[in-house]
Length: 198
Image 1: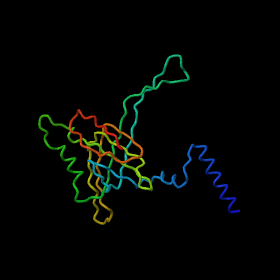
Image 2: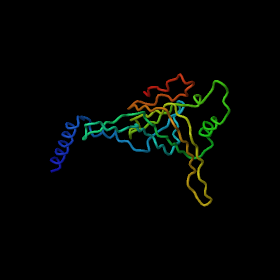
Image 3: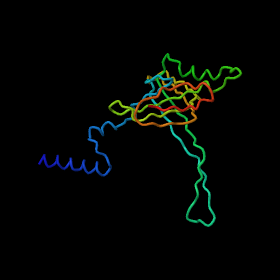
Image 4: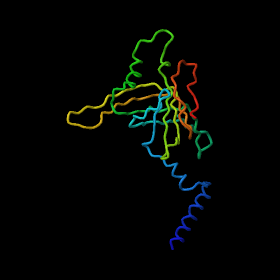
């Protein structure tokens, strides 16, 4: 009876693999299992693993609907430029002032010939599977801080103090597998802000 059940399970797995064009074993499939708590954020070529949350990443394509004369059962969709949503990074408050130093640098007077470009950075967000392998790498191109929020304090509370940094960025690149490509600071506007994450 046990052998019959085992054979049936193998048959189901085989059929499922044939249907979906997947010849991998269940062991290798487990390597594709990704949970939301396995991620790193790479800033200036350094893996920073102290972030507790990373959210807001996304893109929307602006569209315009146009009615065409004589076509009552259709509509035309005109696509515009992409609009990237801000990303929020959260971490426990510590003596490391990298968030504040990056943001406060924007407050300083800028001399002739310098501008916002010197504060832009490419940032990698790496997502790992259960085997510790990089499944995807999301690269924020030309990211710049647009907000910082201090943790809320409460006299009778005992929750971890969390600070937040909000980033806007000019573009997004998504790569699969591999590892981070070394996030770098963009020196001037002539830089494309794009690099492959391999």
